[in-house]
Amino acid sequence: MRASTFPLGPEPDRDCALCPRLHDFIQEWRTREPSWFNAPVPTFLPAAGDASAKLLIVGLAPGVRGANRTGRPFTGDYAGDLLYSTLIEFGFAKGVFKARPDDGLTLVDAALTNAVRCVPPENKPVGAEINQCRTFLKPTIARFENLRAIVTLGTISHQSVVRALEGKVAAHPFSHGGQSDIGNIRIFSSYHCSRYNTNTGRLTTEMFVDVFRAVRAYLDALKD
Image (cartoon, rainbow, N blue to C red):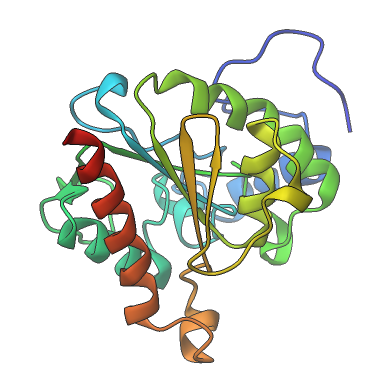
């Protein structure tokens, strides 16, 4: 793992080589599928600009045939179907989700990113890669000056966000439906909306929707 020797912004370079294993894996897919995005997937930003973002949703990493193919977080696989329909339901997105980046769907007061920006083999980033990519997660969180809530999808995302906010994981443990405050940001944790979790019943649509219902109520209460 090559440590960064220069200040990093919120988005990695298209040919980012900070994580050699992930860089090499992407190179393999560029050869196999040259028409795919095959690069670190950038944050999906709100249409009204960074200052409008009150909510940030943080997933784990791009899927090979999902965001790695399309270039937009949670676009091209089942997880996006559930996530974007829920965002639309609670007013955090508008338009029609058609699982492609040119479908015209836009985010409202929300942004969407991943704890690890590059697709990992078998959807499993290793600890050093998660830690390295936090050098992008931290400035991503910081770019949203009016951010008040973060939804973490899964344990790895949750722990990386806690560390990015300089909190202690032991003091802010992951639990589905759990809430925790670090500074002026409230973390809402959820099981990841993957097909595996929904097929096994670990996460139901109702459980997932309830998390965003709580987020909506929290943000609305801040306006009062």
